[in-house]
Length: 564
Picture 1: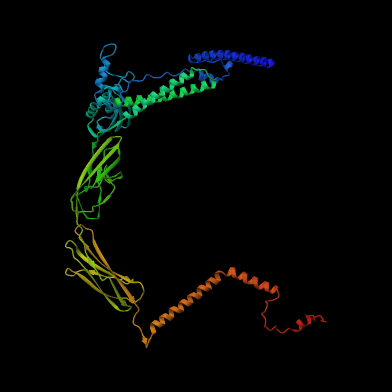
Picture 2: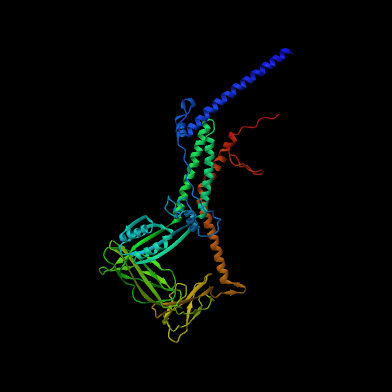
C-alpha cells in the first residue's frame, strides 16, 4: 500500500508540472499574437517566413482598412409636416460660433436632407422653336449657371435640331422654366413629372447604419488572437462590407443631389419658313364611297425630306404620309393620292386640313391648306323578284322584276341574266315603268337551280353609278312524259339508261384496276402455275375419273409387286 501511494503522488506531481509549463507557453503565444495583431492594425506586415504566409496573403494583410464616412443627421419620416428649413436654420444659428447660417451640405453645396420635408425628384421636358439652334443652346446653358445649376449634356443633330439637358436647384425650377420659355419663339410642348424618393432614401440610410455596425464588429474580431486563415477571412469580410457601404453612400448622395436639383430637358427646333401649299379644290363625295385627296406644294431649294398629314374633319385621327413626286412644272411637287371614306353624311360638310413639313440643308419649312368636302346621302334603288320557280324543260317561263325610282337617279337601265349561258335581255327603262317582264325558255333540265339575275342601274348627281339587283331560283324538271297504262315509258327508259351507264362505268373501273395491279397478281399466278407443274399436276378430288393412259404411259408403268 505504501508503494502504491508513492506512485500516485509521483503521477500527480508530474501532471501538475505539465499543466504549469503549458500555461506558460500559452501566455507567451498570447503576447506574441497580440503584438502581431497590433502590428497588422497599424499597417505592419506579418513575418512571412515565421507564419508561413504567401505573397497574396501578405498583400491582403497589409492593405489599409477603410474608414467609415461621416453620416449626416436625417430627419425621421414619421415626424409631423412642418417647415424643416426653418428648424435647420435655427439649429445652425445655435452653433458653437454663435453665428447664424443655412443648413448646407459642404460636399454638394445644396440644402441637407434634414432641411427638406420630402425628397422629390422633378423633371421637365420642353420642345420649343428658336431662330438659331446654337445660340439657343448657349443661352439655356447660361440661364442654368446663373441660377446655380449646370449643363448635364447637349447635342446638335443638324442645323435645324438640337437638344440640351440642365440641372438647377429645385427652388429655382419654375423661374428657370419661365426664363427658358422666353428664349424661344414658340413653346410647342411642355410636361413635368415628379417622383418621391423619400422612402428609398431612408431605407438606404438604415442599411448604411447596420453595415457600419457590422464593420465595427469585424474590426473588433480582427484585434483578437487567431489563426492566420481566420484573420484573412475577417479582412476580406471587412473589405466586402466597406464596398457595400460605399455603393450605398453613392446612391444616397445621388438621391440627395437629384432631389435638391431638378432636371430640364429641352428640344430645340428651328423656326420653320412658310411654304406654298395647295390642297386642291373643294370636293363632293358620296356616303360610304371613297374620295381621293392630293395636294401640290413648292418647297425651297435644298429641302428634300417631307412629312405631311391629312385631317379629314370627321373626328378620326390624322393620317400621315411621306411620299412625294416631282410634277411637270419646275419646282413643284405633288403628294401621293390618299383615299378616304365618309361613313355618314349627317355632319357634312367636312373641312379637311392638310399640313406639310419639310427639312433639309436650307432649314425647316411648313405649309398648310384646307378644303371643304360635301358628303351626299346615297339614294337607294330597291329591286324585287320572285324567290323561286319550278318549270318543265322546254316550257316558257315569265320573269318579272319590280324596282323603285329615286328622284336623284336618272337614265335607268335593266339587265335580265337567266343563268343558262344564253344571251341576257337588257334595255332602257322608260319614265313610267316600275317593273320589267320577260319570257325565257329553259331547254335543259338539271337538278341544280338556274339563277336568273335582274339588275337595275342608274346615274347619280355625284357621278358614281348606282346599281341594285335581285335573283330568282328557277328549277327545271324533265319535259312531257309518255305513259302506257301504268308504265312511264320515258322515265323507264331514262332509268334503264342510267343503270346501263352505271354498270358500264363499273366494268371500266374494274378493268382499269386489273391493269393497274397486274404487276402484282401476274407474277403470283405465274409462280403458282410453275410450282404445280413441278409437283406433278393439280391433285384431283375423289370420284374424279382419271384420264385414259396411252401406250407410252402403259409401257413405262411397272407392274405391281406380287402379293403373297
